[in-house]
Amino acid sequence: MTALIPLFVVVPLGAAFVVVILAHVRGLKALTPLLAVAAVAFNFVAALVMLGGDPGRLSLLVGEWGLNGTPLGIEMVCDGLTRLMLVTINLIALASIAFARSYMRRFTSVWMFEALFLLMTGAMNGVVLAGDLFNMYVFIEVAAIASYALVGFGCETEELEAAFKYLVLGTVGSALILLGVTVLYSLTGHLNMARVAERLPVVGATGPAALLAAVFLLAGLALKAAMVPFHAWLPDAHPSAPAPISAMLSGVLIKAAGVYALARIVFNVLGPNPQFAMILIALGALSMVVGVFLAVGQWDFKRLLAYHSISQMGYVVLALGVAAEWAPTDRAIAALCLFGGLFHLFNHAAFKGLLFLSSGSIEQQAGTRQLKDMGGLTRTMPLTSFCCRIGALSIAGVPPFNGFFSKLIIIIALVLAGHPVLAGLAVLVALMTLLSFVKVQRYALEGEPAGGAKAAREAPAPMLAAMLALAAVCVVSGLAMVLLRDQLFGPASDALLAGAKGAKQLVVGAMP
Image 1 (tube, rainbow, N blue to C red):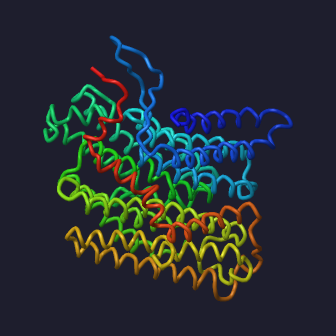
Image 2: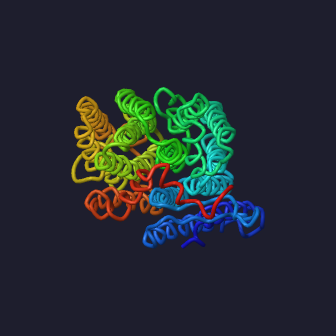
Image 3: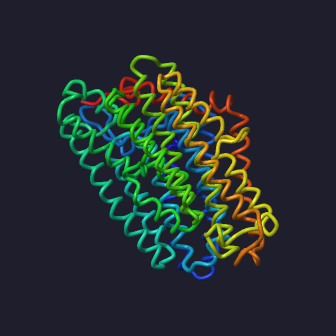
């Protein structure tokens, strides 16, 4: 199993460079879509293999060298949380790249899209596999740079403006993360997460330098995760990007580069404490409420979905915050919060990826993103409308779809943790989410066709296959909740609840 770890990064990054080469060789350019799909499919299968193998922690030293007989190297780690993220990232990536085969034909230089897509996917895998802070930062940057180009891929005014705003704010977030990593390195003398966690109590985990590093890291990662009030880049970036990239940005990038990194830093490096818990709770609750109220007033379908990404990630960060609050005193409540939060993270990737792909299919066939200019799509695009309905019911938390179960678990956990007001807010946000998607059903899928919707036709087969696969995940993951808890979310929760103490087990050998 250990031999598979570097392949999650090597295969997509290597395939990206091969795509560029093939695109410039006469007669081989047509192979680039097949290579991109094959590379991502390999990663998804490898993620499932890792999930079904040894549930323990696996660690690999890349570029291993020795110092006085002590093995050193750049560590790559695969534990329960990493396995969850690898499955999530590569599932959405596979659906998105399969969808793109037909969707991207209206663009020129599609091989550039494929190369950038593979770079972003490989980098996100690297983020969740990185065992040290600096390499996590490097992979976050590689994914971000690829995503900047992908947001502006259409090269129209709207796309370029959104990409520039995303670039500027993303650079600010990256600078904050790098400053935080620098302070921790100067304080502890290590970049390895396990060693930093081990050294922090010795050098003063509550001292001014450690708190400054925490502020930098939490602010930078909150910006990457588009938490309110650091969310300004997301409502422009997600609607402007091609639909497969919108699905990746919302489905996995803000999770891998933002929420995952936040969880890993708070639980496995800094250690959960009441101060960090309050920050996460405040960010989560504010994002949850502000995001949904901004979404309700939107008539641009993709912008509506973008604001819901902020709101739904608020649920996850809120659950992480309450888990951090209770982790030192009551492991059972903390574990329930983490189960709900991580379950919702996975569910959001599935139903939001599905919704963005559905919106891209509708935009391509009807020629508009405005809900008022659609109508009657259940008759002209029945399968796309069916998939859109599945995604809408899932995100709104209607049983028996997956969003219902993860939201219910979070709400129950909030009540048990002594936060009935936050639980009430979570219920209110769920109702407002349902209301905003009733509008989507009324104006986009039902009623009389308007504008370009009159001439709309069903999407091509590859696009439908990608949407139907994610729709199936939305149904099955809710019904198979108990099995997923034991095989996927339980080990992921344990990896976080082990905290800084458990992080020491990730180190191979001893470091001076």
